[in-house]
Length: 299
Image (cartoon, rainbow, N blue to C red):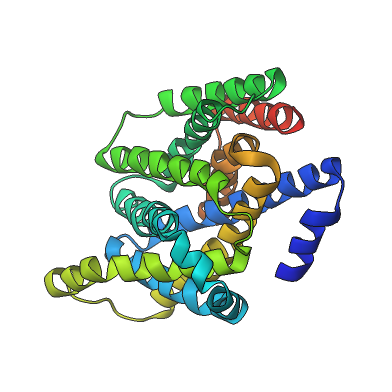
């Protein structure tokens, strides 16, 4: 799968590459939406740091057969760009997911999805500061979708402590996505994933030790292990590969516009899995978000 996508990115025309990038960003967004639900479901059984540690341990095992050998072959290149790799690991692996899990302890999955949908604004700001012209249609789509998110959040019951943690997570993810534009072109995608997963997991070790000493471990049951396998394999290995490839193909701002589908996906999952209904006001806001996604992705 990795080889096919790598070859496709090099050989397809610009329109086809753009379409592939948008599709991959959508895949990552849908899969990540489920991770917010699992994070919320585990909040009273697995401590946030331990959720993050085992998520990335599982992800590391999942990606090792594809990325370990490539990372070893490119070890000199990785060493040369060690500062970039460590910063990407810290933002995208160690800190971001831990903040998401912490947020899940005190706020709903729906709120988590809504707030995370604001992170593309930061992606666009970073890309514009880097000298990239975003284009009128993309900026328009960004503003329309952002307006839908603002209305959706503004119609809630105010900010809880978990919402503040989620705002910090959104800023962290936006910074990570903008940083991806500086990834060395010669560094393979699976080698980068394996290296950042490994580095991020190692950086989590001290916090994991403190959490075990203070909070104790958790009971490995189907209700705890299966969600961790989901976030480890799908939300980490698969979704991060898809997202990184999407950013490489279409840039963080356009991929970020697709990311506005997050609250819509979370709302649909809540409806299917939890039986929650969607109000007319929420439907209107989601229509704005979807419209902004379509406008920005085509711009």
